[in-house]
Length: 85
Image (cartoon, rainbow, N blue to C red):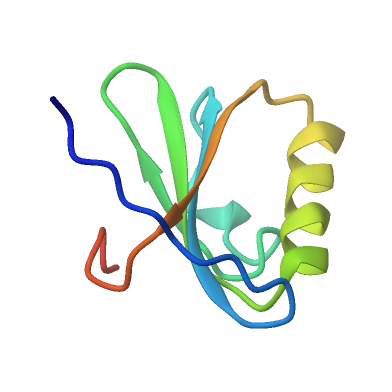
């Protein structure tokens, strides 16, 4: 059975996230996505990974994903030791 991690959500504090979208983005999109690391996967998806200052900023990033027409696959909070970029 997979081990699940519970991450305490605190909407006014920075937290690390992985946002997965369908389609590849080039590194030139990093500024648009507030400096998140852009990681293309072999399966045609892209992961946006990094620290987001608060929930309002997270919603802003998700709006940007919507605005450029990329299908959203998942949004996952990360522990400090997961996917350190």
